[in-house]
Length: 329
Image 1 (spheres, helix red, strand yellow):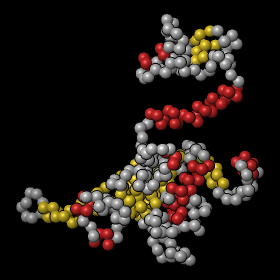
Image 2 (cartoon, helix red, strand yellow; image 1 turned 45 degrees about the vertical axis):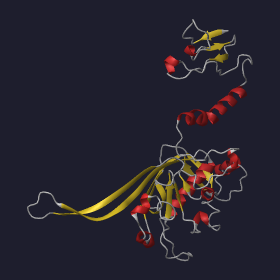
Image 3 (tube, helix red, strand yellow; image 1 turned 90 degrees about the horizontal axis):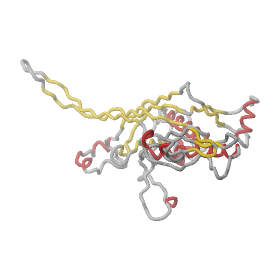
Image 4 (cartoon, rainbow, N blue to C red; image 1 turned 135 degrees about the vertical axis):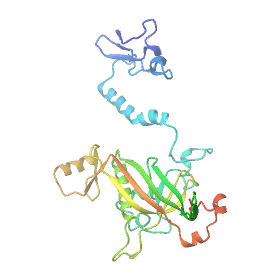
């Protein structure tokens, strides 16, 4: 047995000040490793006594080591990242007695930023005739629920006209009108597996569709693009705002991996068979989705004549006109 990388020989191997020290047996195999954090070196808490390999069990097999590595990466995000990052855009579920799995999340609990269609429009993911294909991943979320908190830029402006009488030093400002200018949304999408890649593809297709009018033999022929609803961060910041999508931009980077997914009938029972068919250059309907992509959406708040005719500042101050269906900002 030999001790390596021991920083303080006056203290035991498992002491936090000896973080990184490890012990090997006569075959040179590591039987113990100090995984504690040294307060001096790491500036954090002490986690002495954690081992990478159990000395009582002897040296582990290759399969055990592979399993430990796999478990580490599977739990890394939850145990490390999520433990350090404060709660952000996760779904809010109020505390109640009982099993949390018994409670469902309603739209009133949702705090994540979401872009969706109004409930009365039976098109796209809300239509049984259209939601069985590429748009199917949006059915469960009832629209685009952005996986990461997007950057949103909202501009409110009041327009004035200047009047400068002769020999005056300061012009008069005459109020003309006010407006909520464009809402610019910048967000990232990630796809680490086929399910997430299909969701990203559905979001891209949906954003393309809501910037197009209905034409030709469509049942809604002659209708403009639909008015969507933008919600998020509670009921007051983005209060179910009626918006039209004016611009949609997608960045497909050249420095990330792409996931290949099947979007047509391949007849493949698993991914291995699918890749074999792909290697044989068979005719498949496939798409490649980047693991990381950037999307920007420019929206314009849009209100009907009846809403504007009934507009009252006092109602907005009291919060009465912030919720559905008005959504005044």
